[in-house]
Amino acid sequence: MSAPTSSNLRTLGQRETLRDRVRDALRAAVISGELEPGAVYSAPTLGARFGVSPTPVREAMLDLVKEGLVVAQPNKGFRITEVSEQDLDNLAAVRLLIEPPTVRDCVPVIPDRDLPALRALAQDIVDAVDREDLIGYIRADHVFHLALLGYSGNRHLVDVVSDLRTRTRLLGLAPLLRSGRLDRSAAEHHDLVDLIEARDPAAAEELMRRHIGHVRGLWASGTEEP
Image 1 (tube, rainbow, N blue to C red):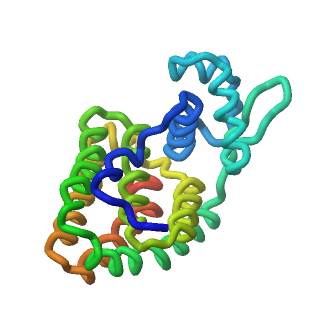
Image 2: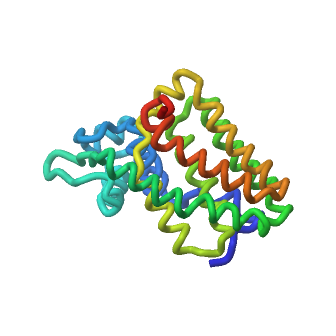
């Protein structure tokens, strides 16, 4: 896989079909806990919630069944899967093994010309927080991190991280957003671009390690672990 270029970085989060856009929104709603773990939702109910007809919702939810995020319930709808604390710990542990060293290795190879586009992706995350748009935050965060990891040139690594992120639950994000405390985490993405621009791989690796640590602390429950 070739690394992203400045011409396509800004299109990484764009989708061509309504089904894809609905799937992304539903996936983010599951990850954030806006769709409650263990609850069953019908396609018409979700369609009304997201302002679309039941058909693209039903199609999108079938995609999420394949991802293991929901389970089809005949004649009822879709049940949101529950993930154990141990599974979440394990997911974060694997991400820590992969992402920080990969970011470290990417820092020297990211062209200067791509920095404005990465900065714009980081700003998308901040803007979502300013709008109090939790689903938008998760989607923008996903796009930024996969774009960054794309500079590794390893499509398999990017796919693995994408799957790990999808299976994670960040149920503490909603209260953090309401309290205004998510701003600092959003700003860390600009901090990361600053370190890339400064060509400081070690500091970028450490920031990414701390950032992922939020997954099982700040973002999981709304409070940092001791």
